[in-house]
Length: 63
Image 1 (cartoon, helix red, strand yellow):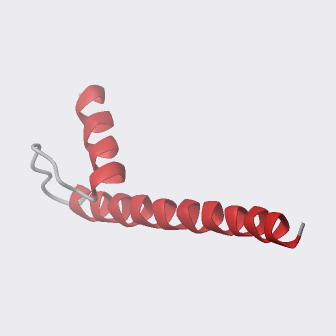
Image 2 (cartoon, helix red, strand yellow):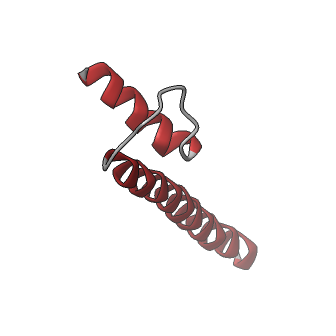
C-alpha cells in the first residue's frame, strides 16, 4: 500500500498526474493538488536557476 502511494505521488510530481493507478474518491483532490505543487516546484526552480545564471552572465559580460 505504501509503495502505491509513493508511486502515485512521484508520478504526480514528475509528470503532472499521468499514472497507471486510478485514484477514486476524495483522494482525487489530493492528487490534483500534488500535481499542481509539482508544476509549481518545477517552474519556481527553473526561474531561480535562470535568475542565478543571468547574474553570472551579467557579471561576466561586465568584466
